[in-house]
Length: 485
Image (tube, rainbow, N blue to C red):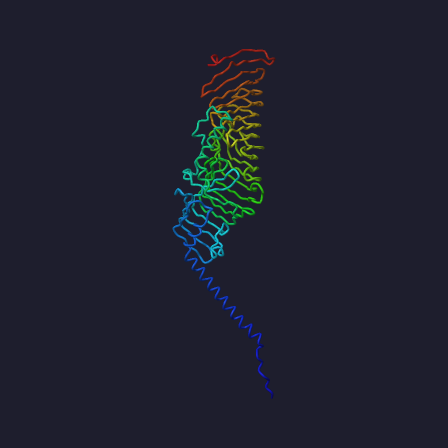
């Protein structure tokens, strides 16, 4: 029996095996070195943090943190971060938060705007200013940040009584100019320049105040997620538990996108909902506190977007009128809100209305037509029973004393106590505890009652002569106020 020779590996296979072992060894060595480097980086997180904030030139002033911890994968947690301006005043204080950085930038010590990939701020107070071209800057929080659900209305501090619309615009412009001059020196804390930013921002339970278009908004319990890419677009999803300042309410949601690719200004596609807004904070002038919800979709230039949405109110009380289930369409074109197709139930009947509201002057105008209003619902103790159609107008200059309600009314058949009548008609105006009725006509069976006017001012009745006519229009008799009293 022959025994063959033992097969030997070919020379080139032996060489490749040795090369593979060396490559595997080098790879393992590199991995071990990388892990060791990452571990050293994590242990020196504070040093890395200090180097990064010292070398950056986007944020004006100094940034410090009491505690900084990092893991080997570029995730850094911090506590009590304090950003101060050169005068030593705090621009932003963050009790806790975290951020994610690009490892390669850290390893090569090449810190830039895109090094920061994600940032999370917890329980912070953030104050932001938007310029007219919607450039963002961060400023020192104002004292109003401590009182989110209170109104910040300069009209409460400056007398506007007796001023017309143009004078109010000029007064507001001067007020805003002084505030702009006082604060603009602090509105250069964030210098992005032409740097590209691509990061994800999260706010958890923060307070946020925003200065935009010379208005001041305060928001509490803010939850926000924004995916920002200044070369492309930003997606935002935010909510707030309460807000104050120029407008007071109980909740906000904001969702949508901002496109940065426009050659001029960024273009937005945003849906904004404001919940339980207090109308009196908007200066509706009638001490109205019935809550309303505004849902609006904004499109166009971020600096001057156009908005279309809806208005909803469960109840609305104005002098002598009680509306329920108020709905309508809203159109926003800075600085005006226009209301169309407004519909409401009132005293068993319905009201359809249109109107507008100026955010700068706080002037507003409403026009409405009421159909089949039941007087028994409106005046339950006055023994008057009929259905009334009414045209109503409300014109306000932003205060109760400068609000006038006027209109006309006509009724069908009805009765007052046991006295039947064919029709009631007339005109009316109501201006701050001063109610006038004009051209009042009461048609009874075979008798017509007419009076030019009667007035109730601060609860006191002033009555013009009352004339009685027969069916042919002949004057039967006249009563004046002394006769009646």
